[in-house]
Length: 265
Image 1 (cartoon, rainbow, N blue to C red):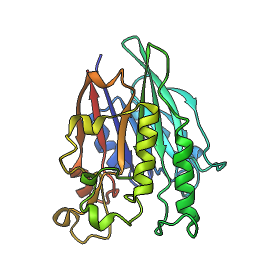
Image 2 (image 1 turned 90 degrees about the vertical axis):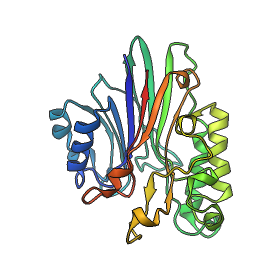
Image 3 (image 1 turned 180 degrees about the vertical axis):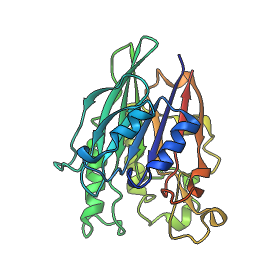
């Protein structure tokens, strides 16, 4: 049985539910992980997802942050983890069973970090760095019959080709060396495989986010790869393809992020 997993920072799930419905109907992922849902659990559009054939697991709050995972397959809650002693709804872990194998899926929304890349004067940036440090605790399952996926808006573009200009963005939050080194350390210590870069060579430019500030985002193409899909090594060999749905940035009233889809054999 194949498995299709998608991740998307939706930037308000209630506001953009029509876009989510379009995506689900056109691409039919088995699992969709949403970030920045900006919605308390009791106001999440659960009924709309169920009508589309998806069950949900939610970790949300009013107005800010929030993550949700929806699935056409039976979806079990594993954990809602708090980071940095803050209950700000930035993680949910779920599991599905596919062809006799358990697949654990971590859905993350890493803090953006504010504008000033100095943890001494910017508490938002300090929070981001502390959050990354705690992410070292999230590692793939050691069970032989279990695979693990980590997805989400990690708010860091780690490679030079993950931003429109490495030189211009070196001192811009999301691409500073302390952030990119921190994310690479999380990946290395956990033994995570960057599936997007397994399928699309690191030599190629790759973006998942384009600022609302650009008058013509497509022509300017000043993007960053802030959204990621990682897996445990035992799942990487069955990766079929990865697709970044760039066209979604041009949909009506879009999120500034676009969906990323990974398909497994």
